[in-house]
Image (cartoon, rainbow, N blue to C red; front, side, top):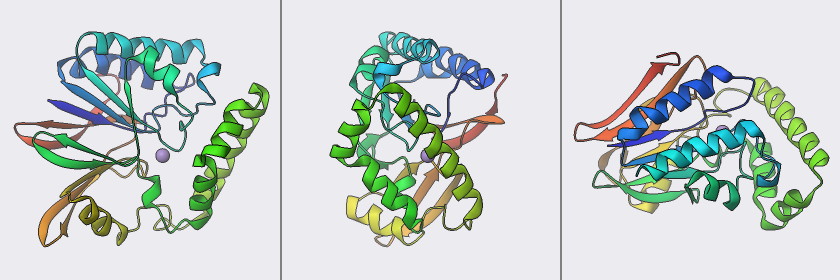
Length: 241
Ligand SMILES: [Mn+2]
């Protein structure tokens, strides 16, 4: 059995979510061969050198799971793209590039965070290109901590006001983008998060039935996609279960 989650937006201010996640690790994830975390795992990450005791406790919980034999894969989101090698080593997880082509349950599947699919949001796409450029990343990683905290606050504030002003189609995935991208990777299944609109979308790729599975964010409830002999099951669960 394989589990995929995304958009937990873990932060100290939401102990209900971290509690639910730690419970999820001890129970369902413990039974899984692999756990995929497709971005925005943390609400904010300003660098592995600025890890807080809260974030360290999450890394230790992941480490415990990977020591028990569950493989853990982590992909960057737009909030935590500065997660680096030191965190992955501490947490016992493997960093996946976005996009990643993997084999899950005998099928080739494309995994993404999902923000790069929202191509209609041109201002965001420009910012994303700038933030993910190796030179900018180098500069960001080497800024003093106080400057990184300040920048992270500014980016979050801007993202919130921008998102609330933009039409909902603009901050969602561009539909025409999806079949083209899936065909170019030769997959019939795409799994991503980011939009906080959990759903299984049926479509056609290269003349065959295909699916785009959107993972849910953890807020009022948790979400996980389970892949096993029964196929793909996307379902919510109570945070206090
Ligand atoms: Mn996101």
